[in-house]
Length: 124
Image 1 (cartoon, rainbow, N blue to C red):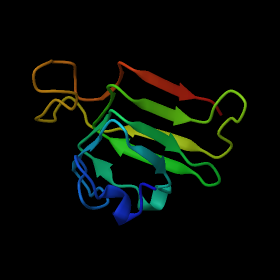
Image 2: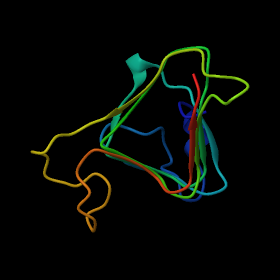
Image 3: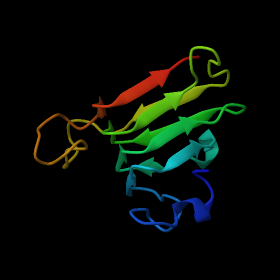
C-alpha cells in the first residue's frame, strides 16, 4: 500500500511514504497499490516505475507529478475484465517557466511527461 510507511522500507525505497516534491522510484520486484485519495495526494517531482503500480478501486485516486516514467515496470488502472469504476486522475504538473526538466536533465523532452517504455493499461 502506497500510504503505509512500512511499504517503503527496503532496498531502493525511500524509507517513508513519499512527500511533496520528492523523486520516487518503485524498484523492480516491488508491487505497490496506489491507495491515495485526492485530499491526501502530494505533488511529486518525479515518479519512475520499474516495478508495478496499480490503482486500488473503491475510491477516487489522484496522482500528481511533474513527470512519470514507466521505465521497466507496469502502471495499471483497471483491466479489460475489471475496469476501474472510481475516478482516476493523473495530473502532470509544471509549465514552460519551470527551471528543471521533469523527465531527465539529459533529454530536452519538456517539463510535463508521461513516458511509457514498458507497459501501461488504463480501463475505466
